[in-house]
Image (cartoon, rainbow, N blue to C red; front, side):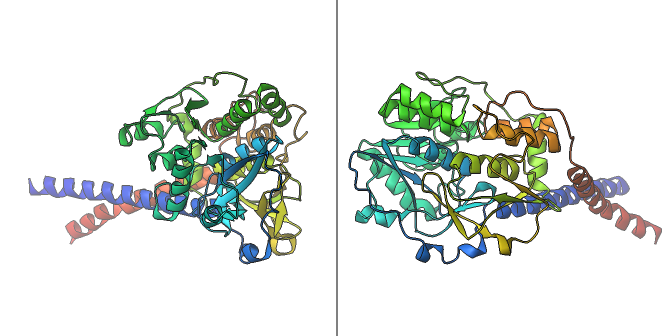
Length: 431
């Protein structure tokens, strides 16, 4: 009997050690991925003091819209998608606001210099927003983002509009603006939000939910649909349709919110966690940028390659250490002479053969390229996690050899560590 108990204890200890080793390896890999994903280039250190704020807006007929950027990082497409949509209409005045006027990270390796700080808004240096756009933030209920949450609450109390994009609903849920209201969010967040914030009625299967002046959207790219709805509401359906056609976004139409399938976590999603937790020997892509680049194009390339498919570490590169986008956003970049060599250079067209076809969005060529590089399944999984309604994709690729080898290696290391108690026990029995 003692021998059986000893063997059982050894087996349990081996399983625990093996599992702990695997969790540690994958957890460490995920930490590396997040550090790369939300990074600010070293060349951005003096950007706040060197780059001027936007010129004062002399036209009082435009609707001021503040796109909030988390001090600890925000999701790129959540912020840049609505930014471009609203900025394409002459009725809106777009500007970015963070806790401080210091460089902030966006997912996919992007970095932005905010136009204003929260203190600037409070002091009247920046316009008081009639609309605030709230993207997903790395620390939605953390102390660092408290000034942004206070600005959201003040905007809502004033009867102005709040647009929460994707997991930006977590930021709103950390305030009181969703209490007693209907809302939506990224599909994988809704079960937890229902449990932790029962005062809100959480809805699934729609691109956006409007309840009074609070508008929330489903995952990532759905923020584009939410912004188009704001254009329709403030300016009209014709203007919203014009912008939707210009950016090629397929998941919007005037009127009620588009319905969509309710996603759930599935075994077929394995490329997402596998790539996110195995960043070692990942290729580096140089994202070449110039002044006047469109915001959605930048977000699509960085988000999909670097943050949804986790296919590469993306480094934005330009002639200098910053570029101004088509609608005045300040993106921080690594100068070409400091960038070093890349495994591949890409553009906002994704680098796919044929580039962006007329009438399609900036997401399409990137997803085609990912399908050709890593397989259609990887591309469709990435599209699922940004809730983009992708159409036909080319067959090609397969599970990358890097992930196959690293995944197998991690399992073998875990098994090896798990075998240690057996080896120790065997050695003692021999003695």
